Image: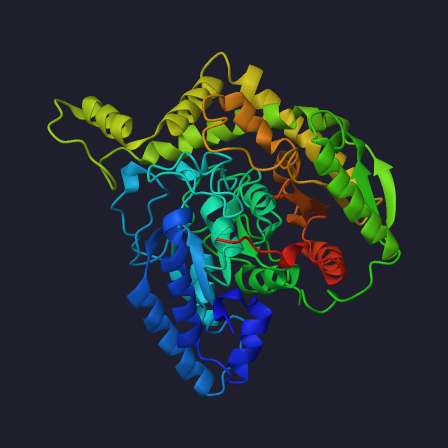
Length: 484
């Protein structure tokens, strides 16, 4: 039995029955990291000693009769999420040697649940990108084809789950950064409703759309992780007093009679024909299970990318102002004055894509341009949100492709920022609207994974789990694993 290949559900059952120990499970994952991460480069930091210590503590809790779905389960964390005593770099030179003095709210919850931290995963610097090529520590490689990108910005987490380096991983999604790599790596990736999981202890990118969530091997596992990390947090005012349901309660219910909307704007334009065929086959499968499909329209979808790439750089330029070389992170030496100190620290510490977004955002927020760009983008965002809410009032969820194509080659789009931004064309809408959305494996095109996206009503992740799990009970795409 190869322990690192287990799902959360399978591993938890074996741990509870004392068929395996948390130490054995953790050792198996650490061994897999050592075996394949030299090729994939998914991890920035691996915490062997810390992981074994946490695993031994979990075994004591298990021996004492404690139960819990995540007790003793090893996982990896995207490196823009604070972990006390473990480096948190955001894949940037400016934070290369930064060790967080506290853990994020979601990490504290997983610590209480007894989950075991294996280490931190690579990402596009400060989560700015869709390929995990923008990391100061080098790109992550897609385990399905090492010449291709894993998607981004949570590419390290997605690649690690696909390669069975952990039982699950955490990512963050601002405009598709969990769903996009989940699609490219053939794993399940959930962006919860905005505010469903706390942002406290997350290095902020776009505060109005950032949300942490899980990357897992199955839809059922995603529900287990969300149940553990969701809920109100006094340190994050955007987390409402909304009860967290038992996501496993209705997950096995039939999808018969559920109405699923197909937005016509997501099935035209630059969508790869073979990707569309894979999504059409997935729709056919759900129809067999009794789901009803209706064509719907979201006409303002075409403005999503433009709106997102004004709002996001604007918030980035504000959020990254704190990295000034004074309080923490890289600090330039031998500077003549304060301003030179700022410019040298930020000039050396930030990479090209971060600088590009800071400049775009500062321009959009500047006097004379604020109304024309930022304010207008926020108005468009409101229209997109209202439009999606209205369409979802007549259906249970929406189904779309996650990405218009499959994973591209490393370096293929790095010289064309606009083309890279267009990777987010199908995922920004749900982010701007604050809706839950999930990508699940739906097939392959020329050996490269295809993801199917489900978008739900606010705080109705349960319906996404129900539809996604039903699809995974009759298909095998999520069981396929890359050969390394």
